[in-house]
Image (cartoon, rainbow, N blue to C red; front, side, top):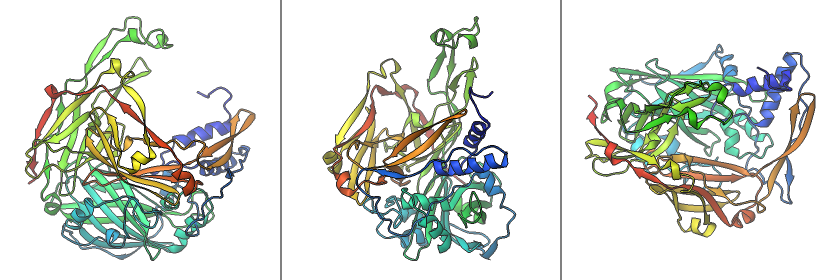
Length: 558
């Protein structure tokens, strides 16, 4: 049903917003361009144009280190339209690949990849001291190259075990990269380069749901080649003597060549892996539905008088339901592990939606030696939820999942916004996200236009990268101003939007350490250094429900 005062342009805008995107949403400018083209094809007046990008305050935008250009993100449907194009494959990898010790050029070609790196395009954004040596002890060199329109993408290495897959790529195509980087814009350089590729789609032995891309990192090496690392989590054991993995990458080989979306081309790599090599050293726990003592009461009387009475049947009765852990997969390889659980939902009275499965985030996870396992990367917050786990002790024989319960009646009283000063951050502040755990800050630095630091987890830090530490930078920094048109039927209103910067996080899968970056669009280093403090959200009132703790034995994979 149309919303009040809805126009055909509004309907197109809603349809556009409902389309599946790649790994980040379209910018306002990209949305306007796509909407204009759609209105033109539908024979409708174009939406009113909006001027962009004026800077409020006295400072100019920082100069780019290279000539930069803005990426135009494709929709998933746009990429499908170019799949019929012909690719040139220069070289194929071995027929059957085994996991062996070997150098990975993503790490070898990188300069000092620390949290203090000023320009994340010149080095990996994260710090991977824990993961690098383990991946270089357990990977296969591939060397497959595919060329499209002057862009060559090479799959350099893969490292696959029972928990997931790591894939390393090199993209050569200076013209396409420079097309992205030369365009003016206030976004960080690495954000623009992120518009060059898409690595979401994969399959394992034909199963397109087996792998989930939870994290990417990338940088330009000294020769202008883009080095990419993609990390994926499994939800099922890779079986068979031969495991076929298909990586369906896409690259934008001509972002500005007579196309609204750019010229997105498929770069599909297929590798055959030795199954025994992939499963070597793997350990798994028994999947299944586990009662963890958690229930939810659906009481219609609690919702009457809140505007939903028409949806609630008069004879509706209170109902208590059991909400188990629906564990699909729990496995560990040489580098790290994966926990995957299903969190289906049920709708009551046409409006109340209740999750009927426990999230992996709702458990304090250890092994039977007492070592805490940290959830460092997250993939999925809907029905299919997967989390990267740090590895258990080699001597461990079981994994212990202890439910974490919140005192909901006093949850608001136990919650508060906390503040930590800039000086405390520099000196290694302790950030308590709850009364059961949090993070310790290390390697805090201010470089050029960015704040960077690392978060070392302790205790129950299962919310992983959901922790949001916000600089109190109001009235301190220069912001970018942008005007936009809000349409309401035949009328429109011009509003001004202000943008301060972008916060991103990457994690070391082996250690659980998270690298955080606050990249400012227009603020100077002097302004950033005047930021007095940071704020974050604390929630108390959690307890460990040891009476319902699950002890799941680990079994070696045959």
